[in-house]
Length: 422
Ligand code: IMP
Image (cartoon, rainbow, N blue to C red; front, side, top):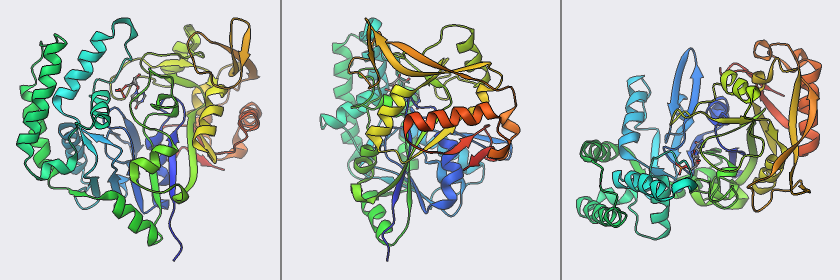
C-alpha cells in the first residue's frame, strides 16, 4: 500500500494569516488533522453557514464528522481552556470524544505557568515580548529544563506531581517578589478540566499517526503562529516558544521528514503583527488604520490591536526557504480593494546598507518598497479568477515572480465559500 503523506499548512509570517479557514476548506481532502505546536495562544477562526467558532487548542478539522483530530506531542495544553473550548463545540452538536486524540507527551500549562508568564513579562520592563499571557513560554521552558508535567502524567499520582510543580512555581514567584495573585478559582476549573480531559483518548499519537500513514491515510498538519514567531527562525527574542515551521511538524507529531508532502505557506495580502518586536513594514498612518479597520485586525485571543503594514517579501522569501514551501495561499486579498497604490517591501535598509535576505538583527531596519497599481473592484463578490481586475492579477504575478512559488489559493472573504482555488 502506498504510504500516506503529512501535508503542512503553515502561517509564514507573524501568525493570524487565517489558517483556521483554510484547514476547514482543506479538511475534506484528509483523514486526519493534527496540531503540532503551540497552544491556547492561537486563535483559529472558522466561519460557515453564518456561524463563527474560534479554536485555540483543538484542530480545525473537528467540523467534519468523519475526520480524526490530533493534538500532538509538540503542543502545550491548558485543561481549563481546553474544556471550555471543547464544551462549546459539544454544545453546538459536534461529537469530539471519539474523534479527538491527545498526545500523552504534550505538556500541561498549569495556572502557575500563567502567573509566571505575567511575572517574567513584568520583570522585562521595556523589553516585554507582549505575550498572550497563556503561560506558553514558562511551559515550553520547563519542557526544555525537564521539569514539566505531561498529559500522560494525569493518569497516575497526579495530585502529588501537581503539588510539587506548583510549589516550585510558588517559590520562583516569591523569589521574583511577584506574590499579588490569586489562582483559587482558576485552579478549581483547571482541576475540573483535568477530569474532563480523562474522558478523551490520551494516546501515543506519534505511533497512531505513523500507523495511519502506513495504511495510506493522509494527514494535514495545522500550524499555529507563524515562521517569524518561531523560536529558532523568528525575530528572537520577540517570538513564541515553539517550532512553528516544517521542522516542528516532524518533532511535534513524531513523523520522519520523508513523510512530509506539500508544504502550504499562508500569508495575507498585507502584513500584521501582534505584540512587541521588529516590524519594518509597520504603518503608523491612516493607511495602517485603514488596513486594521477593513481587515478587522484585532487579536482573536487577546483583543489587542494588530500592527499593520504592506506585504514583506524579505520575510516571505525567508519563510519559504526555511519551510520548503511548495505552494502559497494568499488570504484577505479583498482588504486591499480601493487603494490607488499597493506597496510591497522588497528589501530592508539601515545606515546605507540594503539587504534582501532576513538579517540576524531585525531591529532598526526600514522597508524599501516597490509600488504597484491598486484596484477599485470588490474582490469579495468574485467567484473565479477570470473575474479578477487586471491590477490584482498583476499583484499576484508580481508576488509569484518575486517569491518563485505559485499562489494556488486565494481568499477573498471570511466565508468558506469565498475561496478561489487555481
Ligand atoms: P506567547 O506565544 O504567548 O508567548 O507570545 C509570544 C509572542 O507571539 C507575542 O508577541 C504574541 O503576540 C505572539 N503570538 C503568540 N501566538 C500568536 C498567534 O496565534 N497569532 C499572532 N501572534 C501570536
